[in-house]
Length: 68
Image (cartoon, rainbow, N blue to C red):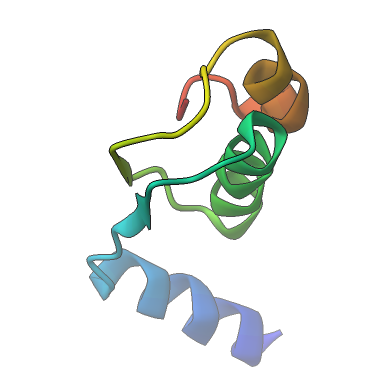
């Protein structure tokens, strides 16, 4: 139990931004959003995407579409 408290405390202090450069596949971008959300983070920067971030990206993001 103490370990979970320590992990939550570390996340508060961690200033994490994930940067994707020229991602090719929209579903994978969405999956990254879902991973971020699952870990308690929400900052994603996408540079020069090579795909359209539409329906497929939203499918991959599932409940983390707000990050997308």
